[in-house]
Length: 526
Image 1: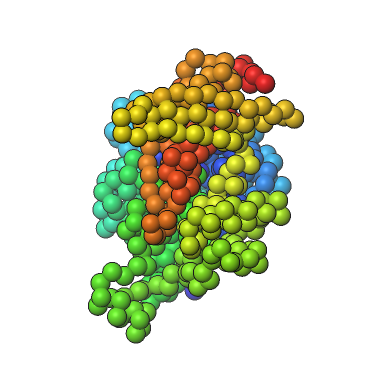
Image 2: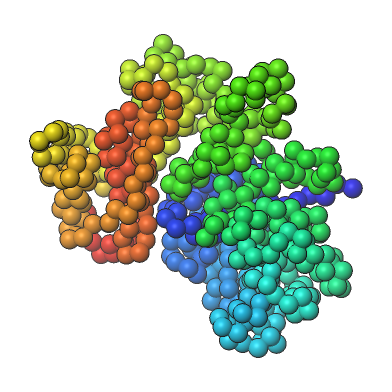
């Protein structure tokens, strides 16, 4: 009998806890729509009690997602559960709303963090599950740091949580300490020792501190887990979480070993989802990352190339097309028309309205004048830049740079801001250590004038890379700004790296401006 493995995606909760991966509510919703297309079973949309922004994001996702469950995280506290209930109310079907409550169960957490007795921990867990059950029967209970918990206590609290009404029991490897054999044995013990274990789904949630998150997740499946909690690109707290794409493709590729298990993931949406998450979070996927890395389906060795040309399976255990990695069968250039571009956009998984499509075609033609061929990576960049722009308020209208040997680098920047029905242009000039520094200082002047603030967000990270091949390749710049301990990410694309740098900075500032809580009470001066 085949057994479904439920995919619980926590990219928008645990994944967003990656340093510098802060997302706006709109960006979270965009990712949620893509996760729905991907076919995940449960989207953990956020931790509602954590911040007003998180609560708003969970509410928006619950209001708009229709084909999968939406979960909110809550400590075993009434106020946390109440925040989850408020955020999940828009779901039309109550059984699609999941409250995910947790409490630590390891001795080190109980003694030093909770400072409670084990009896009180069990009572707190039971009360939380019963309280959450007033709203929905879809309750998940997690034993935080289960990997380092005593098995007798773990069995007891799991049994009591199920009695209280938990329908999913999560056994997290919170700190990535346990080895696959140990972690698998933990599930085996629970299956054999907890009398009411058949009334719930066992879940695995693994962190990658020792690089074992995926291996531990697979070991758990082999020993009774039927839900895997994971993230796109493996992002998450510290070293990250189990990578969704790796878990799913292991089960699919090794059908000879996992013949009884399957997921409902549309694997052709894996690569587009990976790109979207990378672009919006600003977390670059390493080239040698399994499944979705830039080199995952590339062959440098002559022996490998020869083998692949004769028979792909000699060196490729899965097809690039199976995970949605695009192929450049259709070469686009300055002679390509709208039909060719629209066809390629559809092949890449984009469904765009006519207004945005027209803008992308115009930008595409501009790009064709700068470089001979336009690659899929260039198209991804054009779409993400244009779609992201519709969310922002600032737009770059003009820049002029003066720089060279023996010349003090100076920059003149003009930005247009749209606020309601009003539009106004601001222009400033400044000098710096280089053309980019000068441009950023001029932009900071505009922001100070526009928002009437003295201190602008601080630049904490800047990265530049080529996103396609050739000397005319586009440059992608990702910047991270920090303000009041909150990080804002921006991304810019251009064949001119200075222009890309300016666009990235403006994009990050748009995210800052959209986050009104950052400058509560401050008016935009138009």
